[in-house]
Amino acid sequence: MTQKQENKSSILDILTVILGIQELDMQMIQLMRLKKDREKELDSINNLKKKLMKQQATKDEEIFRLKTALRLSEGDLAETQEKIKKLEQKQSTIKKVEEFNALSQEMAQADRERNSREKNLSDLYDKLAEEEDSLKTIKESLKTTSESSLILEQEIIERLKKLNEEGKVLLVRREKLVKDADPEIFGIYERLLKNKKDRVVVPIENRCCSGCHITLTAQDENLVRKAERLVFCEHCSRILYWVQSEELEGTTIAPVRQRRRRTRGAVT
Ligand SMILES: [Zn+2]
Image 1 (tube, rainbow, N blue to C red):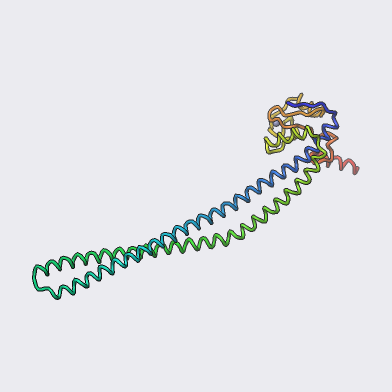
Image 2 (image 1 turned 30 degrees about the horizontal axis):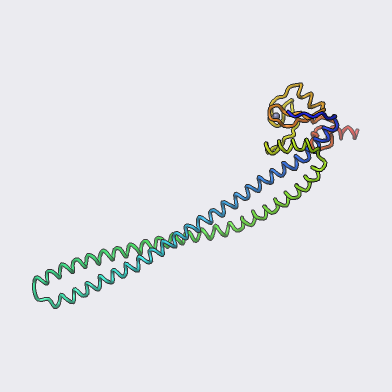
């Protein structure tokens, strides 16, 4: 628990500056989250496109392979048909029964071979038609995905650009505030923020630390109220402050309820 002796007004002044920086940092964290979400969207679109393109390439290869197989199969069939033609010519010149029987057997075998090669060829044609249909579907969905994603992609890129610009503005504003900040307390703040990625200078609400919502002791609450030094929540290490302090009046950390009451008071 780091504690520093400071007088009341300076601790509150210091915390007011830090609170201004903290608000900018919260906006920055929000921006970074949005940016990450947009980048994820962009990634998933690109991954889908990549997947479809890969499928298309695989189909292209498969179709090329089938076309090669078809060419070979057509050659095989032509060869068998040629063989049958020759056997038929030979048949007319045969005189001996034995020779005739042998030739018949050879012809029957060539017939079976032709049937099998025809079947093989027809299977390949069926397969090719199937693969070509499938390629067509992939190409169509790649086209629709590319078209619809193009709009979304450009939208996301525009939004990312805007987020980057907003981030730059925040950084400039932050730099100005940091110049006014107490270096030691700012250092503590930055370490806490890095650790928690959330508000680390928080008000006490109903005697609870509004960071971790654990009830504080009356003694701790008193120390915070006095604002003589920095007080950390014993449970979550956040820096605590007291909202009803006059010194914080009119700043972003003063509760709206209080400001309204004071405005009304001024009117009457
Ligand atoms: Zn706490």
